[in-house]
Amino acid sequence: MRQTLDFLLDDWLKVQQLTERERFADHSAETFAAVLDTCEKIAREKFAPVNRLLDTEEPRFDGERVHLPAATHHAVAAYVESGMLAASQDYEQGGMQLPCVIEMAANAFFSKASVSIGGYAMLTNGNANLLMAHGTALQREVFARNEFAGRWFGTMCLSEPQAGSSLSDVATRAEADGADFATDPLGPRFRLRGNKMWISAGEHELSDNIIHLVLAKIPGADGKLLPGTRGISLFIVPKKMVDAQGLLTGERNDVALAGLNHKLGYRGTTNCLLNFGEGKFQPGGQAGAIGYLVGQPGEGLKCMFHMMNEARVGVGMGAVMLGYAGYEASLAYARQRLQGRPMGVGGKDATQPQLPIIEHADVKRMLLAQKSYVEGGLALELFCARLIDELHTGQPEQASQAGILLEVLIPIAKSWPSEWCLEANSLAIQVLGGYGYTRDFPVEQYWRDNRLNMIHEGTHGIQAMDLLGRKVVMNGGSALLMLADRIGKTIAAAGQDAELAEPAKALGQALASVVAATRGAWASGKPEEALANATPYLQAFGHLVLAWVWLDVTLLAGTGSDFAQGKRAAARYFFAYELPKIEAWLAVVATREPLCREMQDSWF
Image 1 (cartoon, rainbow, N blue to C red):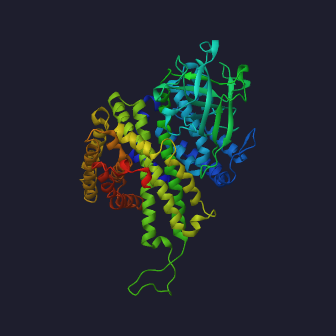
Image 2 (tube, rainbow, N blue to C red):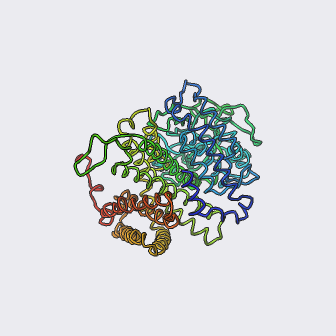
Image 3 (spheres, rainbow, N blue to C red):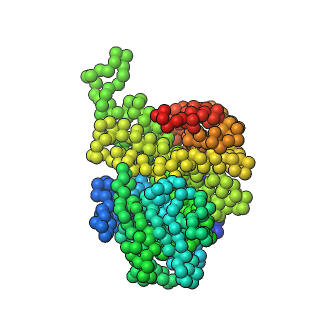
């Protein structure tokens, strides 16, 4: 993996050029490499050895406290000590001012070694980053700074038992906290009452405090909640009360753990049902969880999307690295497992020695598929991280273009790896055969851990409607046109390489098909018709993007080494076996196939 990572960073994305920018001027290729080396070492020594332990010894709630294995505490402490929680922050915030792309690459090692431990850090970092973007100066100083230092950890609290992904139906209420409403220096103060479900890292004792970012609705003058998402506001709700100096007051906020969810995978991360304002704890002598408004009333979802979009790229990277872990495990197994003999003119000769199974064509097919999924997925996530750096530090025109490309790519960055790197894990199990289903080998855990990523931060259906319903048609389709222009430049460059001319032609045809299907989907102007087949559109669009990524990467890979030949073989596999799938996906999109929309409940 490290050779591929270095190639993508140095040769493809040319991250060393970032050191020419003022923000990253103190860095060099050597400091970037040192960060990667350190994180790789911590992940190998502190995370990977306990990954199975955390899967078998799930978090336990005794009615008062959540118990986690000591190994979780030790691994998290090692991560905090590395300084990675504040890696991309200003020096004044205790950060390293690292580019996002280097931060993402470094964190990939932790996701690969134990994604459930890495979840605590990802949520905390995203929580603090949101506050840096939308919080007041004091909120940033008190809450974000303590999170970046690892003294406090963070969560995001969106879903509710009755609402799930339907945030319009959020029912948690936030009412002004009497006379103290407007006088608290930490922000307008409210009392929250409601329930939040599926809250990762919602309760633990890994840090001195937990800072919940909670979506809730402020009732109108009639006491009723506004319908839809326009009534949603965002609040900082600490587990333990703090003062304006960032010190714990010793008082518990009215946030109580109702119970833990026991999941298929990701078992090392606590997953919680939290009750806000049930009266178990009464800060200030009354029930109701105290929360401090972030941003303006009614703009909670706008603020939360800052964290959600960041988390979507993080989820995509987590899915990639679980796929990568399974790929490496199955590759190692295939090289040493002896089974079967060469196929000759007269069939198999039982007198001949058995072959390593990697010599069989079908096993090579499964390994090639995995390689194309995980290495392509890694390139995609790093490319998105590089766009984030361009958005924040590039010249105005380049920054604007990066922001537009990010808009259209984020649904793919989250959804594509969560589907196809899960498929890589499934193929890893298949390579191991019966052994793949046993806990003697790690691949079954990788699959279980990865299965959650198709749901994390928005299901495929949600990402698909975002892509087809908003991203590719916004501003007259400017994002799709910009992506098409980038793809076109790669096609033109690849057309000059005799070996890549045919894949370049195939990519051009695929691009034309996606553009035509986009128009076909919206030809009637009726959203219910256009979006009925949004998920096949998402799948086709994702494969188009990955084919482009592979072609672009292959242009720089060369031909003279096993490493280069491996890249070209993976790209060739993707174009031969994967890209043709998009025509079937797009057929139902372009014709607005009505079956799924018209299907009746009683027909099932």
